[in-house]
Length: 245
Image 1 (tube, one colour):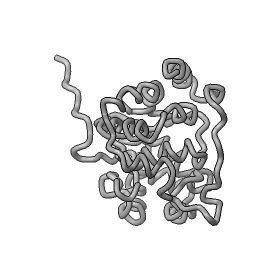
Image 2 (cartoon, one colour):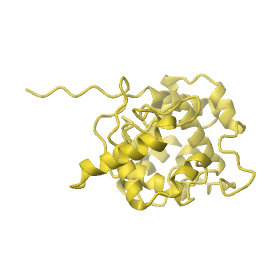
Image 3 (spheres, rainbow, N blue to C red):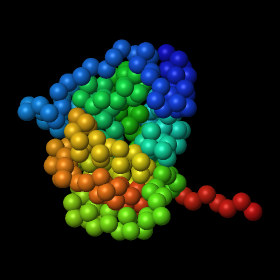
C-alpha cells in the first residue's frame, strides 16, 4: 500500500495541483475556529495518545518514505512553497497538524491521503520523532524582491512586536505550547499560510494568532514572511557543505 502511495506522491511532487483524493477516502470535516465550541489544542483522540508515546526514529524513517516524495528525504520541502520545510519541527506540532488533518480539522486535500496511511498513534509518534531529528536545511525559499533589505527590516519590527513572544528570537517556537519552528521555512509557504490564517481559511489555527494578524495588510504579511524566512535556529541548522576543490 505504501509503495503504491509513494508512486502517487512522486506524481504530486511533479504537479503540485494534481488531485490525489482517489488514493484514499475523502477527508472528514469537523468545525474549526468558526465554531464557538472549538478548542484550538484540545487534548483528545489519537493526538493525546501519540503525544504520550515515545517515538521510534528508526521506524519513523521507514514511515517517512511516503512523505519524502513531496517533502524530500531531507525534509526540506519545496522553495516554491507548495510543500513546507519539515526538518527539525517539534514533534508536538507535527502530531497536532497530522492528527488535525486526519480528523478533518485542517483542510489539506493533497496531504490527507498520505496522513491517512499512518496506522495508529505510535506510527504518528514515530514519524514525528524522525522528522524532528533532521537538521534544518540552510538553503530554502526566501523573499527575492529588489527591496528585500527593506522588507526584512519592516518584517523584523512587526515580528519583534507581536510574534517573538510565541515563536522566539530565532524562530525556534515552543515545543511545550505547540508553537512551530519557523526558522528555515520557505517564504512563499509562510506567506500562504499567514494569508490563509488571516482570512479564516486555516480552520485549526490558534485563535490568538488569528486575532493578531487579522488587521495585517497584504504588504505587512509580505514583510513579516520575508523576515521569518531569514531566521536561522542555532544548533539545529545543517552544516554547510564543504567546498569542492
